[in-house]
Image (cartoon, rainbow, N blue to C red; front, side, top):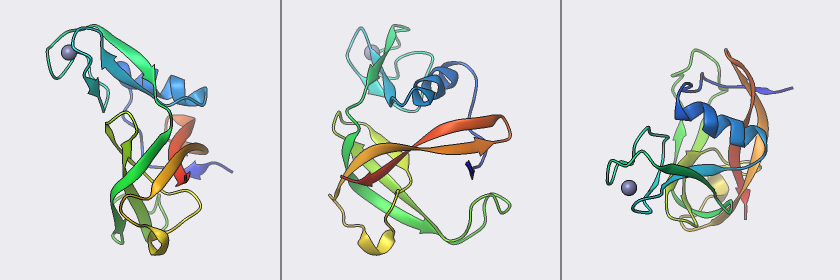
Length: 136
Ligand SMILES: [Zn+2]
C-alpha cells in the first residue's frame, strides 16, 4: 500500500524532479553557467539567473543537519501523528527536507549519516516515489 501524502508541488521543473524519482534517482538542478546547485526546482538559476540547468544525480549520501517532530495535524489527517521530519545536508551540499525511513526521533543525532531510499506514496495526483532517508 502506498503511503498517503500531502499534495506535491507539480508543474514546470517540479515534474522533471518527480520523473527522476520515479526512476529511483534523486537529481537536483545544477547551473551550467556558475555551477550553483539549487533546491527546490526553479526555472532559472537563483545565483546568476541563467536558464541553463542540468539535472545532476546526487549520491544519496548525507548527514542529518536538523530535525523536528510534528504533533499538529497540518494535512487533515493525511499523515499519522506524530511524524518526524529531517533536514539532510546532501554530500553535494544542498539541504533537503525529508523523512526518516526505519528510525525515529529517539535515534536521531545531528551529523548522523543517512542514505537515500524511496517509498511508494500517493497524493491526489496519483502514485509517486518519495525520496526518504535511512540510517547510512
Ligand atoms: Zn548560475
